[in-house]
Structures are given as C-alpha cells and as structure tokens.
Image (cartoon, rainbow, N blue to C red; front, side):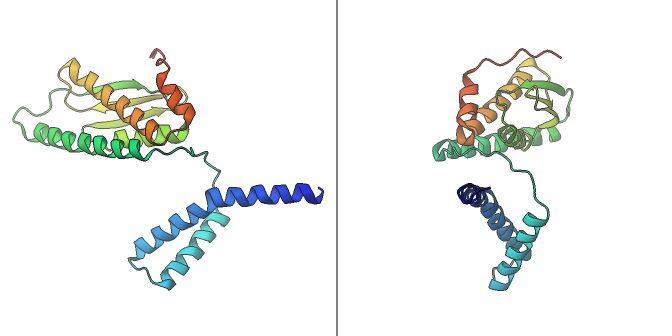
Length: 194
C-alpha cells in the first residue's frame, strides 16, 4: 500500500469514528453518569474509560443510520404519538374497569412500507409502547408486524389499530427515515398473503 492510499484509508477510518464511535462513546458516558446519579469529573472520566473499553473490546457491527432528520416532523410525531398513548391508556383503563370486561381480542397482521431495519425497528418500538396492542411477531423480510389488539368486538376497532400502526410508521419515516424510506411511503403496500 502506498502512502496516498494509507492516508485515504486513515481519513476514512477517522470519518467513520467521528460519525459512529464518538456519539456512541458520548452517549454511553452520559448513561454512565445517569446510572451513578453524579456528574463529577471523576464519574465522567470513569464513564469515558468504560465506554471506550466497551466500544473497543466489544465492537458492534456498524448500523446504517439515516443522515436525514426533520425537526418539524419529529415534533409532530412526538405530539401525535403522545396523544395516542394517552388516549389508549384511558381506553385500556376503561376496558379493565367496566363490568363486562374484555369479550374479544384479535391477532392482526399489519403490512408496513419501510425496508430499512432501523426505521422498521423504531416504528415497531413506537407501536409497542401504545397501550392496548402488543407486537407479537416481527417479519422484517416481508415488512410485517403481528399485533395482539385488546378489545376488538367490532371490525372497525381492528381497522383502527391497523391505521394507527401505519400512521406511526409514516410519522417515524417522515421524522428520521432516509430518502428511500420516504419514497417507499408512496409505493402501494404488497398484498398480505399468509
């Protein structure tokens, strides 16, 4: 390897480190300080040392992250998602305390748009945190979620759960999905075949 090729390889390695490793080390250091409940210089130094040991001794494969971030769509996602969580919490509380209880629940197969692992995972986490539904299975290859939905006596309630899931996915994609993810929103969903 000649000197020029080595310089380019080193420059790439430094660029990758700044893009992935530095934010990871900073995040782990903050997590360390939060766990200890102390922000002293000694705690932060120990956090940096532990973070460097973890990232260098136990390296993880690089996860392709989107460089696209929309503050406006992120704010919209947080507001709408928080509204869904609050409304679903009251709905589940009502179901728990009403005299007749839960008569019927459903298992629903939901087809999603995104093919990105990271966006799919974030959307799945956001869906699973809304009370009243539980992500029972994930099929990334076919872009599907299997949801257990509480209290679905009418078909409209099942359709509402599917709409909410797809709305959450679309908001996650618009907030921080890649340009390819955003373009996939316009594509028709594949036919769901079991």
